[in-house]
Length: 381
Ligand SMILES: Cc1cc2nc3c(=O)[nH]c(=O)nc-3n(C[C@H](O)[C@H](O)[C@H](O)COP(=O)(O)OP(=O)(O)OC[C@H]3O[C@@H](n4cnc5c(N)ncnc54)[C@H](O)[C@@H]3O)c2cc1C
Image 1 (tube, protein in one colour):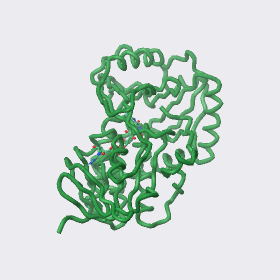
Image 2 (cartoon, protein in one colour):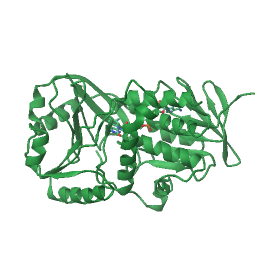
Image 3 (spheres, helix red, strand yellow):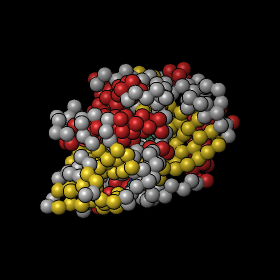
Image 4 (spheres, helix red, strand yellow):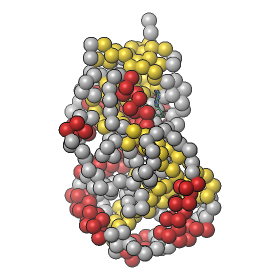
């Protein structure tokens, strides 16, 4: 007789391990299957910034709940190595009046949901980052609870806790097919053999559309490259993450002293290319040294790329696939799937286990695209 599992989770990034842990903590025995090593996809390539300063209620609620869960994670998951959660804030800069109006609306929403966010003049922003160039800056917002985590540690913490609770993790194993009979999931095919299961959770990140196709499903996700670089380490000079949506830029000093920074490029082609380019280095250097001039003295030591798993509205698809019973999605997180994972993992596990979810997630279902009910989040990089 072949292997069986209560659920098969496809993909061992932050979403997969969070769902596997939450399922295991509800008494299920999930099997997580990862084609390479854990965090080998976007999770291990991301900046792992976490912020609550969003412009839609859903994102503020998901991010706020996740930050509370990150704060308790080492204790809850019994992970003494630590996830290196540094809450030094996010400083978000506005560069034109229309954007500033949007920021003020965001702040009203965030405060109504309990986020401790401050509104700053350009000079107030420079009190937080003293070498910030104020050229073009109209204003800024700052939330001191936002911050940065070590993504490899967070994944390890979740995976170890899931295994302790009875989950199994297969690395270097590929899911090659999803078996569907009579409109419901009955199993998966893997490079290690077949597994019978009534539940498949697609947490395959930039490969999510391919895994959906294995069950005969179409979702409008696509992979898009994002590049990032890290500098030599220097003494502590910058506390918060600095972000500009205008430039698509984020820049943060890590606890080890290196600066880590990235730049979005909406013109990147839709594919899984993770090559690094000179063009990115040149554009990144030009913009960041204008905003934060002393960084021009730093040497770049490493550069890499990862894929965003995009959707048409840059918001995740979370919940059941209406067409196939037992098929679930936690995909399409675009540039913010690390920070939302604790809460989205919990919500999806609650739905799978037949519990009432802590937050209604119906609006994040895959059918919103056909209905034209897109979630328009103004604050994405
Ligand atoms: C440069 C960059 C910077 C970013 N910065 C941030 C940030 O600051 N904050 C933030 O919140 N988010 C950030 N993101 C986004 C974040 O990385 C992702 O949203 C998040 O990591 C998604 O996690 P995931 O588990 O869905 O996907 P992934 O981490 O990509 O995991 C999917 C896994 O599925 C596996 N897989 C795929 N197909 C199969 C198969 N057939 N069988 C078995 N396994 C399979 C893959 O190998 C992969 O490991 C950034 C992303 C990039 C690229």
